[in-house]
Length: 240
Image (cartoon, rainbow, N blue to C red; front, side):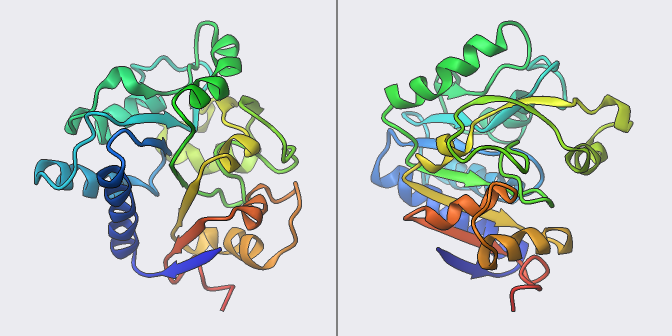
């Protein structure tokens, strides 16, 4: 596992360059995407590179990590809406090749097919992850089995509190989500994780220095053959 330390702006640029390099090398790459505030700088850099003609996403397929249960894709806090607003609407991607888990309708049936759908596209070439303050990745909360595939997750109280900043009131935050499992994530050929801020310091310490345990979901990444952790000084502060 490699670690890269830099400012939020710098690590966002570096991760974007990883995606650009991947797509230019393999135009029909399969990309695993994340939501939340952490990857916003990465996506802004990808939009800029696309507009400058440095990369084209017209043959790319994407799979997102998760979606809240109970939110339609048009809801302004759904992850489909997030991806459209922050990336897909601004690049030359075929939206029929963008996959986001469903939070309404027969979401269970769609979730059961998700891992097989990823396989049909040849597997994820490059996956970006954020990390929760309790060490969760995607919505795999502490205690999630390491062999989990896409499933419904009950959100921990700390996750609900962390995410409430994006809603008008904490009572509006969904308490369940559909998420790719830890095994699903580990199937990606290459993984990059971004973490910034003091509130991520304990999770990063546990990822890099702690034992591998299901109580710290991110610790499974210790076994991945090609994983790079991008952090700012605050997130890295307990490791030094």
